[in-house]
Length: 152
Image 1 (cartoon, rainbow, N blue to C red):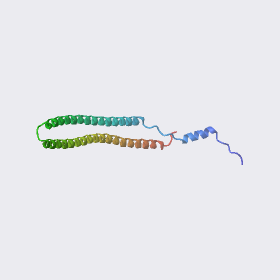
Image 2: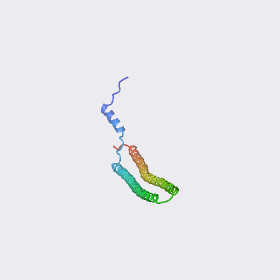
Image 3: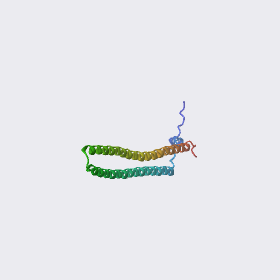
Image 4: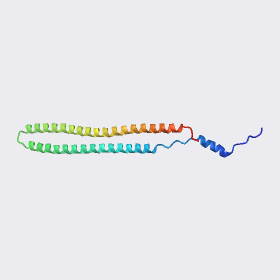
């Protein structure tokens, strides 16, 4: 059986390269816009968290000032003359009211923190979902470009 002539190696290489399709480059403008939106969402979430922290700090100061005023009033009322039983009953009522206010204040601060965190996290979750949709779109667009026949 006679040996068939083998094609030149350059022709094999050229045939292989013509069959090989490189993925298309993603749309750089779209990527830059997506990154810009990611940065904006992160900045907005940080701003929400900072504003929430400032609100909590302001309210905490108000609570401390209110507590100092109440303590001053309590000391004044404790120095009022009366029977020891009356003073003890009055102090017990003040202590009970102070405790109830402290619990309410702690709950209020916790609610403020939770609200701020929820808003920031919701913003980031929305942006993440949008980003994933953008990635799907870019992949689909890239896939469409890869399925096109090579141009001669």
